[in-house]
Amino acid sequence: MLSDYLEYDAIGLADLLRRREVSARELLDSAIARAEAANPAINALVLKDYEAARERAREIAANANGVDALADGPLAGVPFLVKDLGAAVAGLRMTLGSRHYRHYIPAADAPVVTRIRAAGLNIFGKTSAPELGQMPYTEPELFGPCRNPWNLDHTPGGSSGGAAAAVAAGIVPLAHASDGGGSIRIPASCCGLFGLKPSRAFQVPSNVPPAPGALGVDLAVSRSVRDSALMLDLFSGEGSVAPGAPGSFLAAAREPLDGAKPLAVALIAEPMFAETLAPDVRDALTDAATLLESLGHRVEPVSLKLDFAAAREAFLMLWSVVAEQYVLNADTITGIKPRREDFEIATWAMAHIGRKLGERELPAALEVQQKITAQLADLMTRYDVLLCPTLAAPPVKIGELRPTQSERLQMRAVTAVPVEALMRKLLTEASNKAFAWAGCTELFNLTGQPAMSVPLWWNARGLPVGVQFAAREGNDALLLRLAAQLEAARPWFARRPPLLQARM
Image (cartoon, rainbow, N blue to C red; front, side):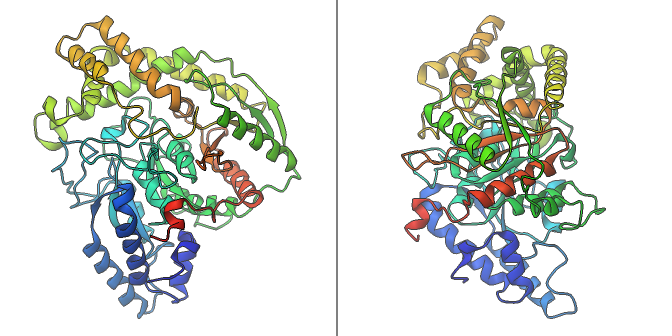
């Protein structure tokens, strides 16, 4: 095993392999050892595929003795974890965090997994996600709660909570993640990691019908900016620009802003879909604004002046239609008729809301999405970057946001008797609870803009509080250059949670 495994990001590990200072098997053994030590505490891995990964490591070692150094991929031999949601891996169970899907084994790789394999990454397991990615915390009934390495009583966020917990716990330096409403940025904030949601234009093509509103994108959570930049090259490119070459995202991350051309930054201290911002979050924003100004950028407080209520309603309608597709139409995927007892009640209720309300109101929701997108695009003609909260409060405790017994009874009632007024009341009350904590990320899924959570602040209790930056759609390179500048000014790579300090 590599004794200083934790000192390297994915690019660093790949460099060690190319120089033959370590073998792919040694890296994999290090990752598995970390997984076996940490996972009993954090419950991040829900599927282990160790033997197949060991065979791939042996193949890489055999290739290393040939003409070519290792494999072709820029991250060949680096251990990797895939989120157990959406990213189908041929021959591996994909549960989507749901009892209904617990025996579902896809026959083919999803396009995003094809690109992961092309990069040479060695998949050795899958990470936990909330059922169908519906919640901003990772506590699926199927597997139990995933826990935050910074404090095991708190959530790592969601829906890429297992991925973020695994990276924060040092199992892997980066892991696959996806984001349909904040699911990369929320767990990145909770776990002290870097998380970029790419522009909608850079989403990996899918082999399933696109969801209405095209809210979701794939990338990763990582400990370094350059790892995420390389993943964006690998996911978004068609081979025209090699990773690291001029014009690539990795090249952008290697060219941090230097202050010669200061950015115009709009400071957004509004809670957006939430109601209020916790003092810790306001402190994190103030700190980030001060840091930006010290780096030569111009920061100006701005109000978005958006109809957040309408935007929130549109987002929920789009979200409910996706739930309907994967719940009430689940038999089109698994061949098994969906049953109430095979889904969590909150997911089952959202699917019924999608059937009763979402489908009918979808055109209006898409119109609101277009309007909001145009309004933000207009604002971005005056500013280079928006600075805003990632979350409205620090990581909540495990179980804090789960439905109460009273709420569960209401959910059962509206699925048994789908009265529209009761459905709307339930949707409002249930979403208020989630948005009160995690209501600051969804806006940029609606608009398709790139947005990132950057780990610049830890509160007095030692919990990470990320801050969010957004740019014009397609201007992901600018965000990466800014992130690289912030990473150099306020390094976070060496910050380790108590779980790592305990040397598990």
